[in-house]
Length: 207
Ligand code: CDP
Ligand code: CDP
Image (cartoon, rainbow, N blue to C red; front, side, top):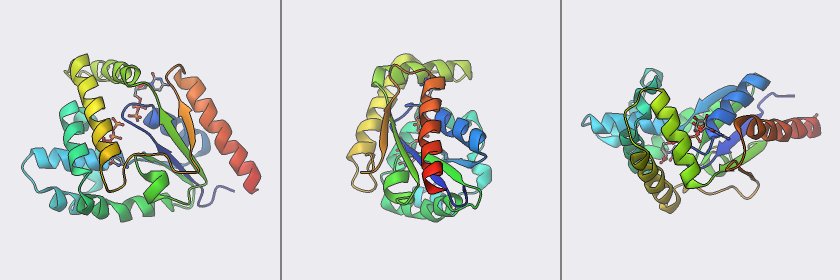
C-alpha cells in the first residue's frame, strides 16, 4: 500500500534530486514537494529587503511559483537564510503535513531523511561530482534563458555545498539508513530507474 508512504530525497545542489523526485512522483502518483523552493522564496524576499524569519512565517504557496527563483543569486541567499534555526523551524510544519498526505509523497531537499521525515520508507542521498553538477545546472539555466556563467554557477554550487554541510542546524548529510546514489556517470533514465527499483522493493516488502 502507498498510504502514508514517504520518499525522502536529499543531496547537494544540482545532484539530480528534483529530476528524480518528479519522475518518481509521476510514476507512483505521489505528491511532490521541492523543499528548496521554500528557502529560495524566503531568500528572494530577503533580497527585496524583508526580514528572513518574518518572510518564512508569512510564506504562501503562491510565493513558490516559477523559474524566477532559480537564479544563482537567490540560491546563495536561500542557503544563507537556511542556516537560521528560526527560518527552518517556521517551515517545518508545512513540510511535515505535506509528507503525511494519504496518497504518498516525495520530498526533496537537504534534511528530509534526517530531520523532516526521519521515518520515511525510502531515503535516497543523491550525489555527483561538483564540476559535473555545475555543468548540468549551467546548461539548465541557459536553456531557461536565465543569464549566468559557468563560473558563477560553479562558485554558487561550491559555496552552498560548504555552507549547507557546515551549518549546525540540519546540516546536509546522509541519514544512517539512506541509500547513496552517485549520478556523476549516470544519465537521468538510469538514475530514475535506480530510485524506482528501490521504491518497488520497499513497497513489495511492506505489502
Ligand atoms: O534538484 P537538484 O538541484 O538536485 O538537481 P536537478 O534540477 O534535478 O538536476 C540539475 C540538472 O542536471 C537538470 O537539468 C537535470 O536534467 C540534469 N541531470 C542530468 O543531466 N543527469 C542526471 N543524472 C541528473 C540530472
Ligand atoms: O536545486 P538546488 O539543489 O540547487 O537547491 P535547492 O534544493 O533549491 O535549495 C536551495 C538552498 O536551500 C540550499 O542550498 C539549502 O541551503 C537550502 N535548503 C535547505 O537548507 N534544506 C532543504 N530541505 C532544502 C533546501
